Image (cartoon, rainbow, N blue to C red):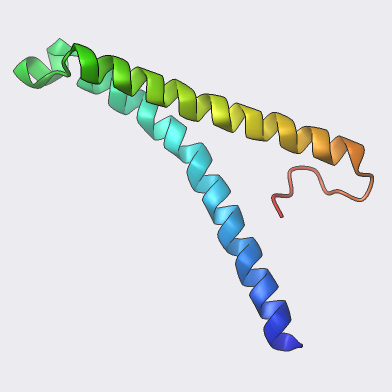
Length: 89
């Protein structure tokens, strides 16, 4: 019994940590794309055209998925009276 409860707690902890990492990834990508596209900061090592747009598209995609996750989580919590707001279980 204790092993089953410990397994559930570990799974919940791992899942929550992955959600946190997912949200922080967007906030890491934005400055990364910004700084690597700057000729003043990067000089001749600045991103090329394809890398610049690929970085922008990937960053927007990650931000869109995170926005969708937030909206979906809020909708689920609003429809379930027993749900604790923003619990990512």
